[in-house]
Length: 263
Ligand code: PEP
Image (cartoon, rainbow, N blue to C red; front, top):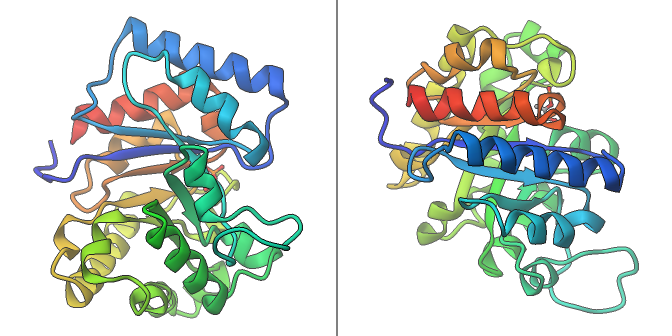
């Protein structure tokens, strides 16, 4: 047991996967695992971020699970409300479809879709103002880590959004620390390195907000059943954002179980 009072989160990021039939099967398999061997809601929040067109379908299928499993959008528009913005999906429209959770700032969106600090501030402001819970992703590149800039980069990414988060809205923020060099590469940060960065993030958050001690900080980057227990044992690692391993129901379930049992 790590002694933390923060309920851990284990969230699967399906990215641009899988096809509909496989998504439905994955949901069924995961529900079956939870039915057979339940994971208490008070011990671990669970979420899945499917492609946007699958959000209502996944949500509907999870409604028959024996516990809450959040359906999480992978992104949100920097434009609020409704209007002539072809291709965009606003926070208000997500909430209108009962989607109350969103990933913002994933490194793939920062790298390939021009999600810079200005865009991310708008997205976070819109999501929070619409009442959504935001999982805000931060993380350094390999070059930045090798140049000993990892902490500065990550803390700056947190500071980038501080001005748009009202004091009471910090309750709706979850941080996901995802070193870019560990995403989809099979390389995981060592528990010591991950814990050290999480402790720095925690310190930074407590300087920004009185709620800093209670904000969940998830680790992401090649989390799998084989490393989940060690990561979960770190005091400032309050869960996992899981990419590849979330496309296998058994692996994702085992990661969730590791966090639920260790915390
Ligand atoms: C991610 O995409 O957020 C992620 C952590 O991916 P993976 O687990 O595959 O490294």
